[in-house]
Image (cartoon, rainbow, N blue to C red; front, side, top):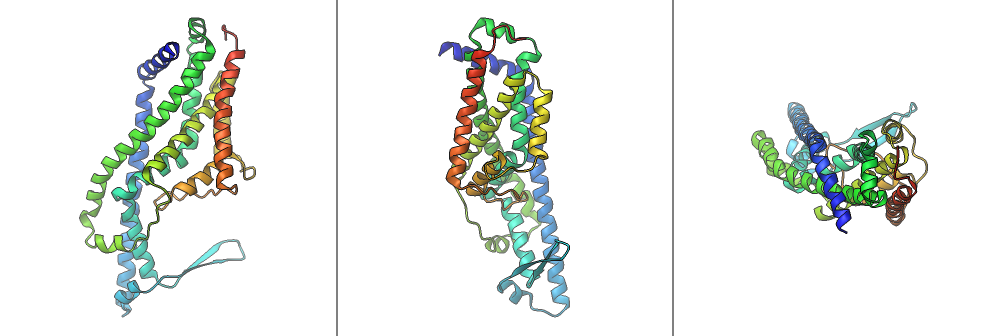
Length: 321
């Protein structure tokens, strides 16, 4: 246990001294700021659309108050060229609801959820595997692997590194959630300065939470840990960053979904089970596997990657080159 702790502390010190933590914080800040700016822009745009639609109805002599009380129906008609024509029978109510949703995204109740959705499901599939890959290959690229392997068992070193990655996932998700929660208060206060009918807009929002924020944080930690281990496994296997980084980018960005048990499809099942995606990020991918299939398969993959890395480490020579 003491040996594992020493390896863990060594990796933590390297993570600090290599300035990787600053790169990580910078990326998280960019994601958070980008989310805030796009959320504010969406609110501004939807409020403008509502005011314009309302003015047009008033100019046409229509009763705006009655329109806001009526229901809105949306019909999608597929055209011959495969495009979709959307028909809205009550545009005033529709734009009112859209403006309310844009404002709700910035409230303390939803803002942290929205930022987690973006971190895990938009940027996470690229960000976390590449981080895990870098963490696995820096010993090889810095030519320190021989020293680490001689000092103690390479298998115990890999074990400690994997534990470090899981702890890192917990830290990233929790710190990100807490920070965005605090920042979100100021962003919301800034957003409502020029909104006169805040209460009315929020009353029109129907929000059904799929899970508590605590559960969302747990799910986010699990998915980020899994993606970190995936990148770490490729790093242990290839010992270099270029090829596995290309594989990650190609698979996550370009490779088509292969059946219901594709990793991305399984993650999507968990995403739509626990997250609402009612903000400025609409998760388009929906998995076809059942919820329990997704949970079991992702859990088995997590365990398999963890164990596989230990097996590979045991088989690798102490004098890895």
